[in-house]
Length: 168
Image (tube, rainbow, N blue to C red; front, side, top):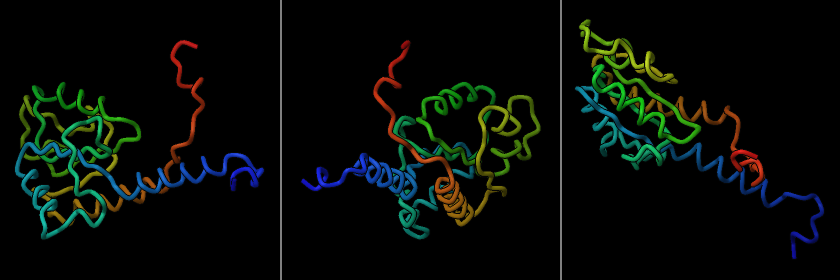
């Protein structure tokens, strides 16, 4: 009844898109990939003392298809690199990568041939958290930066069904 009185067209779809984008900004679902001592600091940030639930990130997702933010905490060896890249590729767009710790950012103190010297050689990194290991407060600040970046990004918009068909 109310939609028939409104002749602007698309009012309900516009409000639904706004609601979806608001929810996407306010509830980032992290995929924790902790491989070293930085993983302990990431677990500490998820605990009650620091409470990542304030930012809507209390649900760590261990499935890449349900995650928004990939938090790489620790060293990546060349043997792990294909698996890490596959996990990144399985994440849905829009996605964000946080490199947590000196090992994820630049290889850290491990200047050896099996250690990847920064995950930015493998996947694009959005937010770097320096330190060895960084404090949990740094991860909380990175989540705030992610929320701020998401607010400035292009919102999800409604697409026609014909645009989604492959090969047409």
